[in-house]
Image 1 (cartoon, rainbow, N blue to C red):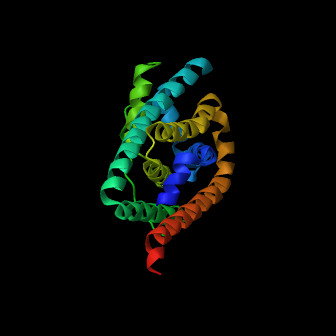
Image 2: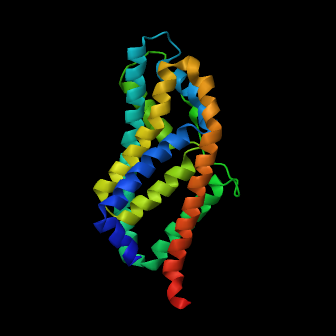
Image 3: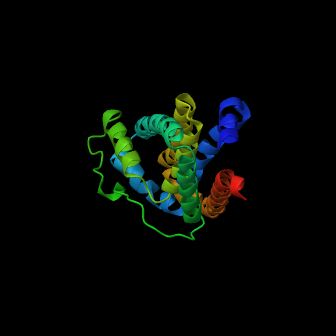
Length: 233
């Protein structure tokens, strides 16, 4: 645990890699099959299924992403603060907790474990007023709080790393980049709705990426277990 904390505290390269992984994790979550299936639904909720100009649609989707980013930023603060508190209070038990979370989420991404995660996106109200700012932001906040089965495993892994880092600023950046990563495909889908079907061809690559992410989470959890129990071997 001490060496892991030194990596987070002293190595800028490690943080840059985590930033990149957070952004790519958001992209992977957004192009997974279930996320792609929901893209037209999300665009419709945000834009109200109206024939808005591409610029207005772009503004609405950016505000939606801002809403999700607000929630994830708050999550980043909570992860860093609680990570610092728990790590100092319960020591190795916190490491085991994080390792177990990473293991479960990794097995979920590999589809070895199958469990449902909550989602209420289908119950969200449509933006019939075509609000450019407030309504899309509120929808983004609701979407982020509800979560989706596609993004939850990756998000949980990023939250675990944010908690281990115990650095509020870095944790905020990680979760914010995750939100931006999720928003890239959403904006493309909103501006080029006719290309959504073509984007579904990317789903197979996303599946491979998510499985790779699952394997990396499992390897990381095994490393953390070894850090705790290695002294007894």
